[in-house]
Image (cartoon, rainbow, N blue to C red; front, side):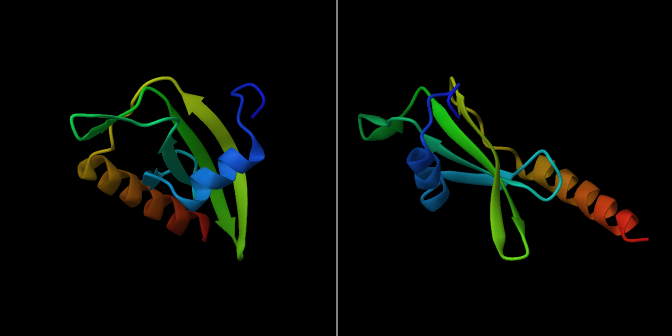
Length: 98
């Protein structure tokens, strides 16, 4: 967090009020995003940096895996990509239980 100049309270703020929530890249993780600073231009929100936090929920406990600052604006994943990830994840979890 020091590398990206993020404080503990800033990471907690992203967890409590994320702008976007997506599935994480790692299995059983969730990634949450919040813009670093929002500027309104002609009634439209705009930002140049995003703060991302990756978490994992285990048995009623929330663990922060990673937190980083992204220089730019990411596009939300498409529903097709999310469906593929969900299918692969369900195949992975069902094969691991055997």
